Length: 450
Image 1 (cartoon, one colour):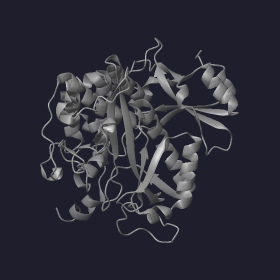
Image 2 (cartoon, helix red, strand yellow):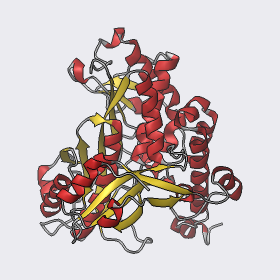
Image 3 (cartoon, helix red, strand yellow):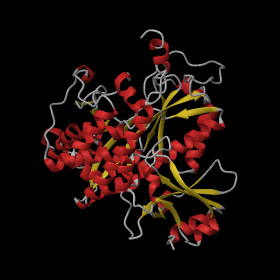
Image 4 (spheres, one colour):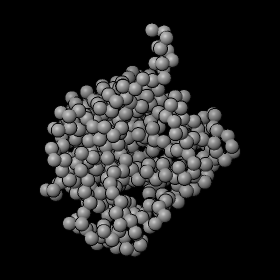
């Protein structure tokens, strides 16, 4: 039996919910789980998933047998799903009153399962909490609206807006370009309100039909939950308006990539004070946090760039970072300190693509900063120059990124050594699957010329 909190029972009855979607974020950041009638859910009989669900690749395959058997019990044990009542919200596109609730995965001994992405973030946050600290996070998520594409051999194209035309020129911050898709965004905001998502602003980014949504700052777990729910909702809204919404990091060859920038600060739990408030020159923890980001970001890049396509954004993106330089209000640097009053002083990491699992990307950046404070790592001097011209120090591809992770024992310990091994095994299998595909470029230029 699984205990259903009084708070959650009241919410389900108050909203006359008929069905429950029990959601578990998987390694890709998408939803796994089960749909069950509300009356069955309220009986507390429990929902279970097999342990192997966290070892599946984005293509539905599995890592090599050695890695799989080392990390998954031979019996493929059940995981018990435990609802987090703070995540309960309506499914506004469902015909019947339906709730979606994010669940944690628990072993039979009552411990959080080590391979669940939500567990990874929880474990990092516990390190901060044990030191009397609470990270505060505000994600910025970019995405593209594209014409529906049912044939993967054809390139993506911007959709036709209300004017009957496609975007051709760059439209950064254009209000009118957003208004081309007014019905879609009106529905997006209606759904977000129904789901109680804390959306702040919507802007048009530099790519054709590329948008960005900013979230209000709050505790890290709730922000990861909200990005997870938003991406699911946004895809649904787009399809209801006869287009696709894609969070692919580099969906079109001649358009900029899409990122998920992460603003972060750290509060003292007892006083509620931002520990980054003091002047930068005198603030050791602020400097050490940046130092940790500089030292460990290369090892964390596989969480910021989880797919082959992710590294296309980093290699060919207009403003994607190439190194770990930092600066005050410097958008060319991977680590940017926005201009703000001291209470809102924060660090923006600009490495992650929009294709990330939000739980893992947020966990990784917080872990890097935490290690910097623990190890008292001094950063380099800030730069006000174009950081992209200061040389590339980040991994060039998935394989290099995986090697960096495997060699970073302190970061692996923060995220969980078994989890890190499982994640690396999954990513290697995904890369192998990609490498088997013969591209149109190879047929075009090599077929008759070599």
